[in-house]
Length: 99
Image (cartoon, rainbow, N blue to C red; front, side, top):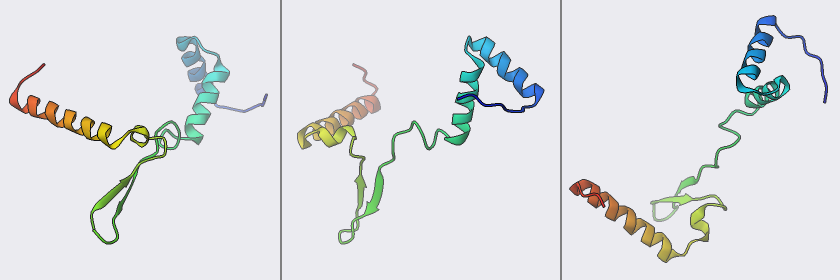
C-alpha cells in the first residue's frame, strides 16, 4: 500500500544510509522499523513462557509447558534419559573430565 509521510530530513537520511549499507530497499527498512516499534520482540518472535503455579494441595511448583514444547511429544522414559544425561555431563564437568 502506498502512503505519504512527512518525516524529518535527518531521519530520512539515516534510513537511506542504512538501506544503502545493507543493500536493501528503503521501504523494507521502514516497514521493518515500524513493525519492531509496533510489535516489540518481547511480544513477537519469542516462544511463549511456561506457566508456573503452585499445586493446591501438595504445595509444590507445577510447570506447565506450551502445547508445542518438545517434551509434549516425548515419553517419560525419554525425558528421564535427558535428565540423566544432563546430570552425568554436570558430574563430568565438576570432576574436570571432558569426553
